Length: 375
Length: 125
Image (cartoon, helix red, strand yellow):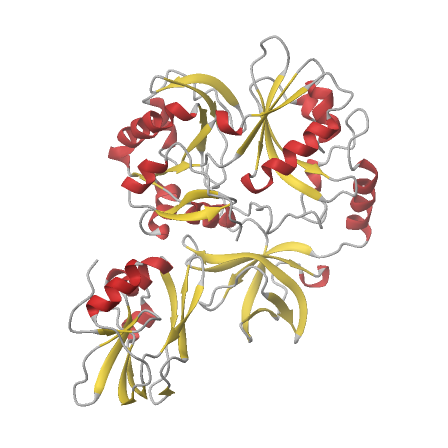
């Protein structure tokens, strides 16, 4: 444990007044859950949930060459992102290893192109340092804006109605992975239709001094439709059911996007060089010709829960490793994501199990995601 | 939360009822249940098993973690709570009542068990 004091979000006192169980997450004191994490999970699937995600790392990139800089620094084609749109992408090392996965929002034009890069809390400093270093030679500025934003997410099928009651912004015109500036409950916000739950929903970037006011307005607007405050525990089970990777679990510097089954985020066809290009081209070929371990879903036949780090076994041999596991509230069974040898990666491969503290429990190999919402 | 006065408590957060005809009931405390979060799976000892004070005799799985279940006393398991095996959420909703875990014919106590007030003070720290 580090002795650095925990950081607190602008909503800290509010979480405590709601009786939240708090946890140290990447150096931030964050709500783990307010009551039952299963109830919170189910509320997001069927109604709506409210999350404080102010620990996420916001970095602003501006300047005449902001787009070509981001194309060089990241693996995606950021120059092709239109104003008001967002892109899921990654930042890799020269050897192709994943430093972090990111969402990049292209903000409205003012004087020069402006992008908001959102990194995982645990990697925010690493991403900031890498971007700053890679910006050399570009007419672009990289700015640490972590302290200038609070981030509140409202997720779930009722979230469009809740938000619509508090804003004049054109939510119907706001597509998935789009973001526009607007006013919510009188508070200036970047309203983004993004999330990490597998449900429809919004992420609202606001000034920290407006966070409490916005949270309270959303709480009130959601009262009649079952909105509940939600902690990071259910965020983890929601993203796991949706098959979304989490840095430190499915993603790491030891893996390339191709190893993680996310090679589609690497855009070789974009103009110019980018950090990791040569190594990633090799990784792409390797994944094609001689795939290493493959990320799969596992569904338990029993009730014991696989955890990150547990061995995946077949015929008494270790054939993989669990990266994330939890009881799935939606499926009613334990589920996991795991990297397994390609020979055992096909859905329905028989004889696959997880070594749960010495006992080999049977698991079914399935395609990801475990859950996909009905649109 | 309040810890029932008539029970005694281990530092591993199990409770033990006063023996009736030599048989005590064991469960985990509300403090422990809250710390675990939603319990999703309980592996209980089997009837006839010998349990030893301070040693693991089962496990409790929650969304985030798995925890060992420790016996607060030496003895022989005479009954397990099938309701909890079927619906582990009873551990969260009624840890001192319907969420009891097993009954044990006590043959010995090795550990020093705490009174309700002592346990309350222990978990407040």
